[in-house]
Image (cartoon, rainbow, N blue to C red; front, side, top):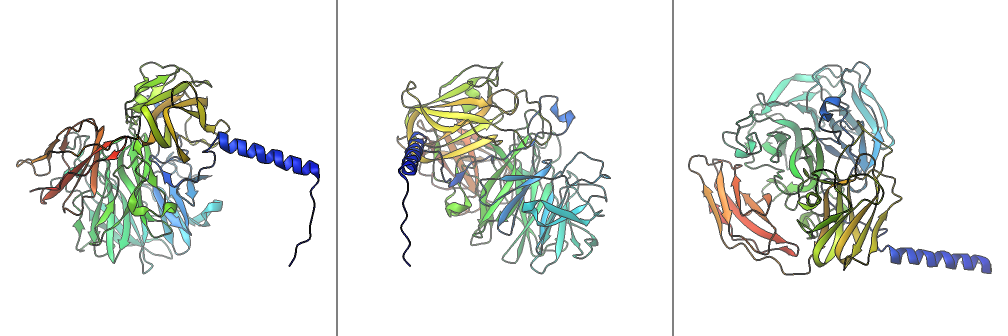
Length: 595
């Protein structure tokens, strides 16, 4: 069919031409204004609530959450975590929208809204409940959680349980797991699908065996000298007819907080044949953001597995924590794995369809590089913003517009992405805040004198405490400058201004000598040492109980030694190591067997 001709007035043509020119100027001036991101970076960037407990704020008010659960419901990811007064949902695992919702009822006498929630899918219905030792918490249901439509399924869920988790088997049977203790095991029980009452009594699922598995020992140094280790945070995943029961241990405040996995042949382990995997499923004791315990495993819309867990800050309070997401899955032998190597560097999103690749290989460009700042508050000095520790931070003297921090990359480098991690200094909020926001401008320069705008978020209206921006087109820069426009509360404080890309130089040399000394006194432990690589700033140590399954990794900055205390005392181990610098990673050291 032929369309009729039409004519535009000269005035309208002039207006359209002017608009087109302005649009072109905008995109030329801000080349990364509308990037379609393929990557994300941990800790994930959601609007974390502030602790609601006055007793937790004696060292300063701060953001806090933990114990995350993600479920894929009708193709959308739903994220619940401790004391957020609602939940998030996302279609891409990058942009998370918050639904404000209180689940406690008038007869629930607690401020935990909700603590370590359980989220399950039963048929076409999502169910939710929080941790409780009582028998009067409400079990909620929804068939439209995106629209925040909920109603009570059971007014008072009589069985209750701390750190609960739901699992629906292929045959439709529903199970609940729970427990958090350094004396008792985790438990499981079947629930009636009609009444949601328990069928029978709770079945013991697993009790820690720290006498055998070194990583289960309590303490930052895994020594069990302070307390016995805790087991908590149940989760169940079924794969190829096997049941993978996951649990958090040995303590949420530790860098070595991890999720382990026990494999069984039925959903309740009473009388079942079970096999604990020797090493943790998710384990991240090194790097910028540490810890990977008490989480859940879920699938994206392509069927790929992911694992979300708790990561730590634990400075202003033991419960000051964040969340991280990592690729996971099962190998050809049905061994469950989670890839936390470079776990706080840029990683591919599900939409990139590169699940097995991990990340694009963009390296940290400004580790311990020179920093200039507009002002400094007390002992919160500038170098804290580039030391790769989320526990330390730089704070400006104020939150005024115009406070800034500038990082020198050392030479002109290719910049692909930037992560801005804000810290809480003199924050005033408690509980969830839904109308706060950050605003800033990022500049770049090749000489430190002539600056161009890289990212302009001076009109941003969202809360972005761990903002991560992937550039649509990489730039060449030596200097990156972050200028504050608006803080939601407190002073302008940064725990990590992290610049990712490539340093345009040589790869690090390979580690030449790797020495593993496994003590005869305690086979769970080993002293590891390697030759220093002069052009490296960090190393990744990989190990496992099979030479083709080196799934556990530890990122180590600066040092060329490590006291490893995580091993299964009854297994042989295999090790390798790689060196890291701004330009990439070295060839791995030949795999070493240690008996």
